[in-house]
Amino acid sequence: MPADESFALPVGQGPAPADVGALIDLVLTRFHAPHRKQGPQLLGAAQRLEAGHAEDPSWPKGLSALIERINGRLAAHMAKEEIVVFPRMRRGRGAPLDRPLAVLHAEHEDLERDMGALREMTNAFTAPNSASAEWRELYAGLAQFAEDLAEHTRLEDEVLFPGFEARPK
Image 1 (cartoon, rainbow, N blue to C red):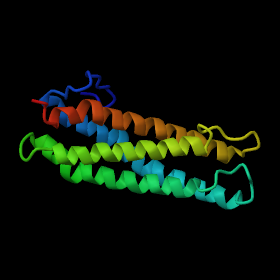
Image 2 (tube, helix red, strand yellow):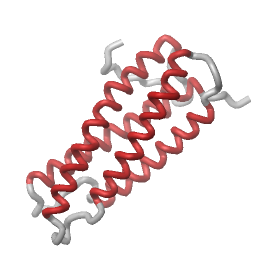
Image 3 (cartoon, one colour):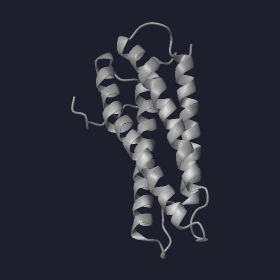
């Protein structure tokens, strides 16, 4: 299956067993690897800009700290998926995944709240008219990061995870 193929199953239905490995590979290459690259780049740009705009009242105070928190949470989250959950999904057997998946769902909600705070702090990633080109580039990068993270969590929550959660009796 091509890495860019979209999985669009109804909510509550997991992928066919043969698709699990392909879906996990898609998550790893399309989302995890880029997040690991983008997050630190965005943080570095925000820190540089924050240092230069410390006295600018239009600069969103605390932006770097929020991006750093998002990066930390996301790194820990992806590690849990890669070390614990994805290998078990690939094997297709073993201990139930309800507890680990409940943790991952809760972490998705935490990340969603953080991204909401980021959107609010940046006026929906809209830089003020006085913003420099680098400031505008940062906001464009943050908007792309937010879009990718939303698609990442949607794919896991709605397509990958349901196939490994207990069905109501």
